[in-house]
Amino acid sequence: MPMIRDFVIDNLEVHVGGQKLFDHLSFTVVPGEMLGIIGPNGAGKSTLLKAILGLITPQSGTITVHGDHGKAVFGYVPQVRAIDEEMPIQTKDFVSLGLPLKLRPWLTRSEREKLRKVMALTRISHLAKKPIGKLSGGERQRAFLAQALVREPDVLLLDESTANLDPGAQEQMMALVHDLNKKKNTTVLFVSHDLTLVSKYAHRVLYLSRQRSAIGQTADMLNGNVLANLYAQDASSLKQDRSSTSAV
Amino acid sequence: MFDYDFMRHAFIAGTIVALMCGAIGVFVMARGLSFITHSFAHIGFSGASLSVFMGWDPLIGMLLFTTGSAVAIGQMGVKWFRREASISVVLSVFLGLGILFLSLSSQTAAFTTTLLFGSVVGIAMKDVWALSILTAVILCLLALGYRPLKFDTFDPVGAKAAGLPVRYISMGFLVILSIAVAETVQIVGALLVFALMTIPASAARHFTQSVFRMMVVSSCLAVLGVWIGLTLSYLTNAPVSFYITAFEAVIYFLSLGWYRYRERALGTAEAREAG
Image: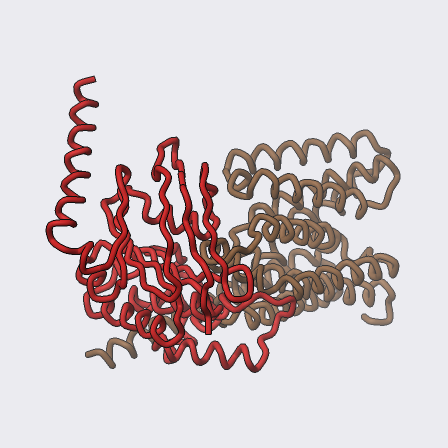
C-alpha cells in the first residue's frame, strides 16, 4: 500500500520569470491526506506542484518527501497536456507508459494485469484500443489519471485536472481519486478553483497567494469569513499595487 | 539475379538497413525529427567527403560528423535546431564543406554521385558485415531504451514529471539516429535518406495504433521497398533509389486513402449509433 513517511516543505522560495512567488513557504502534508490547494490565478499553485516534482529548482528552502521505500513516487495529472490530435498511439499503450521503467521492451504478465486493473478502475477499459488523440476531454483526463496511477504513486498531484470537464465528469473523477485515497492511503494534493469540490473532498486546505499563505482544516478555511477575508486582502493588495504602478 | 555477388550483397545490406530504418523511423516521425534526419544526411555527406580527402573509409567520416553533430544538437536542444533558419544554415554549410573536401581530393564526379544518391549494388562483403554490426548495436540499444524512449516520445510532459532523464534520452536517440543515417546514406544516398527513414513509418501510422506493431509494419514496408527496388532495378537498369522512393510513396498514399476511408466509415458508424 503506497504511503509516505514524511512530506515537509520548509522555507520555500521560488522565483519564476524574475518574480518571487513564495516567500519562505512552510507547511507539512499529513501522510494519507487529501490537501486542496486554492488561491487566485498566478499565485504559484502549479509552480508549487512542479517544485515538488523537481521540475523547478527553488531559490531557497527544501522539499522533503520520503516514501516507504526511500524516494517517493509521484503521479501527476495536469489540467492540459499537449496531445497531438492525430497521435496514433492507442490508449492502452499510452497508459502503459506510466509503468515503472525497465530495460526490456515487453510487458510481463503482472504488468499487463496491473494495467488491466488500473484501466478498469478509471473506467477506460472499453477505450483500450482507441487512439488517445480521439478521446473526449473527460476520457482523456481519466487516461492521464490511469497513467499516473499505474506507477502506484505514494503521492498524487492533480493540477486543476478537472477544470475542463463538465460537472458530472468532474465529480466522477474526484470520487475516483477520493476512493483511491481511502482504499490505498495515497496522499493527494489537488489544485482547484472549484470550492464545492474542495469542500467535498479535501481534508485540509492550503490557501496560496503571492502575499500570504494559510493552511487549515477544510471547514475552517472555507468558512465564508476566513475565505472572503483572504481573497479580499489579496484583492486590495493587488489594487494598491496597480494604483502605485499607475502613480509611478 | 542471385548468381551475382553484388546482388546478394545488395539484398542483404538493403534488408538490414531497411529493417533498422523502419523501426527507428516510427520514433523519428513521432518526435518530429524528419528534417533533422535530412540534416544528418548532409552532415554525413561532408564527413564522407572529408574521409575521401584524407584517404579513410567514408563510413568513418560519416559516423564522426553525424554523431558529433548529434551530441552538439542534444546539448543545444532539439528545439533550437528545429528552427527553420538553423536547419537552412546547417544544411548549406555542410553541403558546401562536402563539396570543398571533394574538390580538394582526387576523386571523380562519380564518387559524388555515389554519396548523394547511394550505390547499393556497389556494396562489398566487408561493408555488409559493418552494416550488420552497426544495425545489431542500434536495434539492441533501441530495445533496451524502448520504454523510456516511448514515454518521452509520446508523452514528454508525463516523462518529465515521472523524473525521466529526458535530456539524455533525447541525446541518446539523436546519436542512434545519426549512426543509422550514416549507414543508410550508403544504400540510398544522402539525398534520399528521407525515403527509408520517414515514408514507411508515416504509412505504418495509418495501419495500426500500437507502437510496436507500427515498428513491425514500418520495417516490413521498408524491406519490401528495398526488395522491389533492387529487383526492378536489376530488370530495367534504372536506379534502385528511384524504385525504392516510388514504391514507398505509392504505399504512403494508399495507406492515407485507407486511413481516411476507415475514419469516415467509423464516423458514420458512431453517428448511426448515437442517432
